[in-house]
Image 1: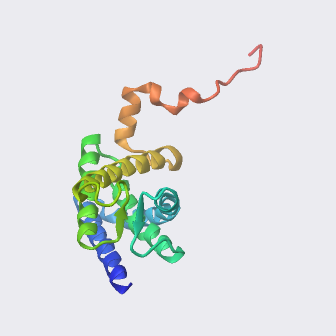
Image 2: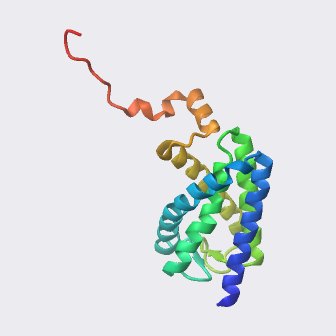
Image 3: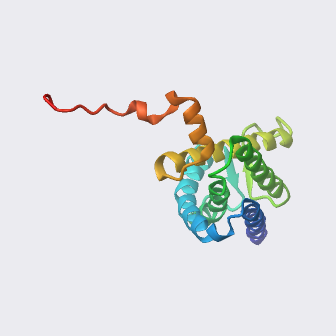
Length: 189
C-alpha cells in the first residue's frame, strides 16, 4: 500500500512541475496563489463527481488506492486541482495553443501513470487490446476533460476563455443567449 501512495505522490509532483513550467511559459507567476486557490476548490467538486460517476459507478477506471474517501478528496484537490490550474493558465490563448498544452498535460499524466501506476483504465476486457490503445483513449479523455472544464469555468464560473469567446463570435447560434426569454415592455411605453 505504501508503494501506491509513493506512486500517487510522484504523479502529483510531476504534475506540479508541469504547472510551474506552464506558469513560467505563460508569464503568470504572480497569479499562482489565485489560480491554485480556485483550482483546488474546483478540483474537489469536479474531481469527486467525475471519479464517483465515471470511475466508481460506470467502472471506466480504478485506482490502486481504491475509492475510499481520503484518497478521493486528496486526488480531487491535488490531481484534478492541478489539472484545472493548468487549464486556468490558458484563458487568453487561441484554440491551437489550448489543444497543444492540453495534449502535453495528458501525455505527461499518462506517461507518468504508466511508470508509477495510480489508475487503470477498464475500456476493454483484460487482454483484448494493447495498453497503447488505452493510452490514446485516456489521452483523448484528458483533452475532452480539459475542454469540458474550460466550458464549465467559462459558462458557470465566469472565467472567460478566449478560444470559447472566438467560437461564440464565429458561430453565434452556439451562444446561450438565444435560449433566454425575451423581455417585454409594458404597453404604452
